Image (cartoon, rainbow, N blue to C red; front, side, top):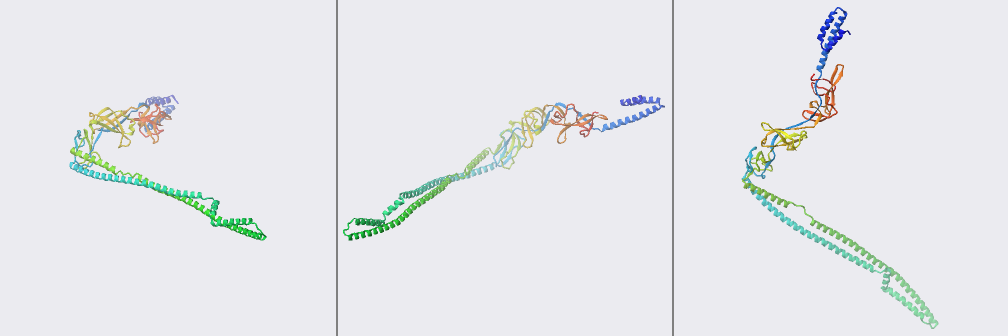
Length: 549
């Protein structure tokens, strides 16, 4: 490359193209006739056109890029401002009540009206009040009749119960005594039968005794003994002759035959009678055993009967002593009488006061519920403020703002038609709203100099937060629905030179207010150039230019 060409390129790069063009053209003009001069002249025009096209192209490319504003994360205190509209209300709302059911003749005040203590508020209908008094007196008289009737019935019931208890106890004692007597009689029979069985001799003794009482047996026995005696007498007699001896021998033989017959008759009879006597003994013993068994069975039945009779009698005693079903009718009637008397006394007192409902305190009428011609109900006739309790300013804040507010925090309050500002008003109470979910009502004390009942205004509380190291404008915070992130402009080298590329940083927000957000350390640094605004929609990897370029 020639020296003149290098100078040309140098002049092009330095931007002094106009002056370079004049000097080069002079040099080339000197050698216009030479070949080298022609080449240089052609090259000049080529590079000049190329350079101009490059400038145009780069300018168009740069003009199309999004322009962004950047800020570096800064260290700051994140202050939170809580602001809400509110209204001056009474500290205490007093309800004015009246006995129910009395017709209202006239309402003597209007909403917003200031009244003094004991000032008439409502006039009740005296004629209607007299009718109510008369009706109450009749109701009380009817109630007294009912009470006397119930007291008499209660006394009769108590007397009847006492009689039933006495009779049930007597029946129980009679059942016990009757059962004892029956058991005693049966036990006597058992004892007698056992004694009779104990007196019964053994079978052998019974047979022997019975045999002694048997006349025929004794006759046969005596006949046998008599014949034995006759034989002995006959044997003892001496026979003188042979003939006498032969007769004696025959007589002895006959007598022996008679003795054997008598013994056989006695033995046969004895055997027969012994079997009969044994059977008789068995029969008597069996009868005695059966009698004892029957008496013992009768005893068990008598015992069971006694138990049944006493069980039934005992149940009758339980029934007689059982508490009757609770009946509160009499007590309720007495309570009703006391209530009626209380209402009657209230009506009479209202009548004595001329039927006027008076203001219980000094204050302002805020709500009137009473309607002329209607009867008083359970609710208040009207509501009024208690001037001694004062007023307060109430404002409603969200649940999110509640975490920045503490009882006693100073607030700035604008009140009144000219919106006068009062500073350092402390938060007196903070309660959850009964009407709006996730809302809280703040109350601030209001003096007479600050405002009147019903005045509206604005409350502002500024809370100084902790110092945060990395804070960026809220406009720099983006979200994809799952993750918060910021975009930064980072220098990147390309074939066209240095460019700014968009980089995404996922971040965690530690705290934020209406302007700035504090970012957790680690995701970005204080040197990062955080994009806070852009002329176009940008994404990660896009090329951008600074807005100030």
